[in-house]
Length: 297
Image: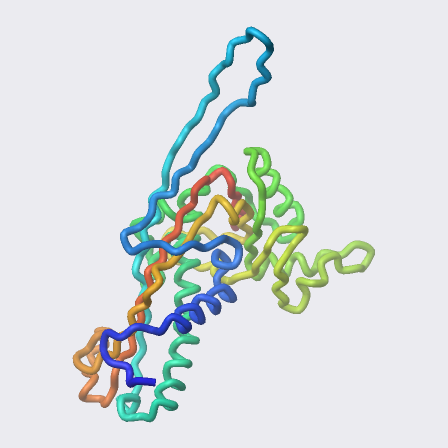
């Protein structure tokens, strides 16, 4: 292993490792499909045919149908995470450097996963926890405003059923279910004649499925900040109506001088270096009617 220098890149296998870890901590990554997105962004076309097909009899006129085509621009945003370590890192053996980087990558994977959910679900800037510029145009809280129900912990089954029904009423299909920890706990407590109906949710467990739908429990649904909503349930067609992806290269920079994180602490003065990694992630909600939210009153 060569010593990492400023501006070097994580090798391909490390990039894949980071994003395989992300799936364990991001509800959106777990519930939806992912495709690579170029740095310049991509345009997702949404094609819809209205009305039914026609059976044409002999000598009968072929009548027109109605087709509509819309598009959604998915442009990646830059998400960074940086941390300081002792400058002994620069003098350490390859094995010790690898240990440093393994710890950094593990933490980075969790931070970037949380940031992705916080931004795409609530439209928040993850660091400041304030409303981002894309909140109204590219987040579940900002876009999913018609299929919104009020959460009742004593009726969590009905809440899920009503959310699925709201999507189905618009002709949609629910492929995934995102739950808050409170909603997961409420499901675990549902009993009939003293028998737990959903034992797979008991003791804080996070099952991968619920009645044929991919499911996930994540605290990111109830993240507070700005004008975010406290979402206990998000149901919808995550497999088709939500797309996300990341640009392949993740720049890894080792900063040796200055005060890159604006803490008032000079790196050289304290024998430190700063490890900084950047990821480019883009997402888009293609059909707002394909989702329903159950939020706290």
